[in-house]
Amino acid sequence: MSKQELILKAQTRSERGKKSNAKLRKQGSIPAIIYGHKKEPQALVLNEHDFIEVLHYGKKLMDIVVDGKPDKFLLKEIQYDHLGKKMIHVDFVRVDLSEKVTVTVPLVFKGTAVGTTEGGVTEEHLDSIEIECLVTEIPESIDVSIKGLKIGEFMHVKDIVIPAGMKLVTDPELLLIACKEPVEMVEPSPEEAALEPTSPEVITERKPKEGEEDEEAAKK
Figure 1 (cartoon, rainbow, N blue to C red):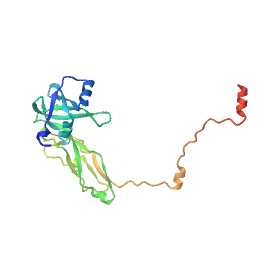
Figure 2 (figure 1 turned 120 degrees about the vertical axis):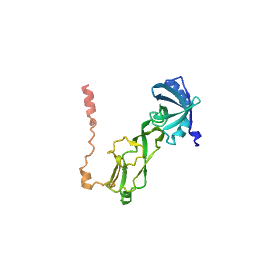
Figure 3 (figure 1 turned 45 degrees about the vertical axis):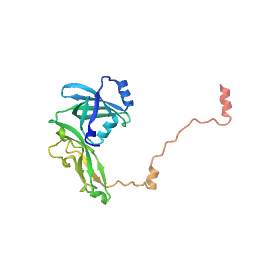
């Protein structure tokens, strides 16, 4: 997509509610809302295909033309259906281009940990962090080099190289990634297997022996 194609077009909508939103989704649109900066919330409708295309570029600050008027809005939240697949609503926030905001930025682990060449395995504990930065300088992602990670070594959030002008918000002591010895699956020995608890016997109603049926019938 060209830079021009990264500009979304939206229209204001007056109808709200579940029925109206469901109708929009069937037409290939997504209901959205813009709020913030002490202004009245503004309900919008976006083209689903165009929004997904722009979203693939990882942009948080989006250029949106609302009823012919261009502006910039910060993507705040995307709501999905109960299966977590289809987008059902989008929230945007009005921003001042000179202000700082706190945003969640995905992490991209670069390289192959040296410990994996020795049989180790990497275990990722976080895939994103929160940072504070100018709204115009929100990165699409932050690269984290793990090449030097050996077996038994760890990296914490504080080990991430944050771009200049940005401030880390996530707890710096949180575990980020570790390189560990592989876990071996040990087969139990015959003696250990014999000690394993067996399933309890299921007791069913005893069937009457031959001749007992006639005795029971005679009693009735």
